[in-house]
Amino acid sequence: MAKSYFTFACFVILLVVTACEEKGDPRVMVTDAWAPASAEGATTAAIYFTLKNTGAAGDTLIGAKTYEADSVSLHDAEKDGDVMKMKPVDGILIPKREEVALTPGGLHLMLVDLTKPLTEGSMITVTLQFKKSPDWTLQVPIKAMDAAGP
Ligand SMILES: [Cu+2]
Image (tube, rainbow, N blue to C red; front, side, top):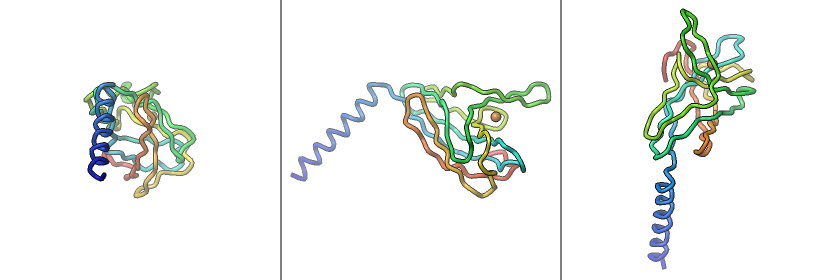
């Protein structure tokens, strides 16, 4: 009985794995999340992380939510002369088998209308929403205001 149950379980796992491969699903992982502490009186804050897609299809980060802010936008940044300008983007594409890094001076999540300041040494929870992959909830450690990386 135990043995046949084990065989059945293996068969089911095999079916699930096969189904995923055939559909060519994305497989997105999120690593190296961090955010600098927010400036005194600031109403916005940026969050950075790396998206890694080891799957057989591309996916798109389309949004995020957190209790720390009224809304979350996807932003890109570029230098316009000496000024760093940010602009909203509809989504962040993560091509299959590729990595996309959100870093200072480039792509980032923007928390808009913070419910409270992000303080160094604390941790916040953010849920990422993708076009195809399930939601991914991550813990984001808050670093010093002048930190350059995770
Ligand atoms: Cu921004």
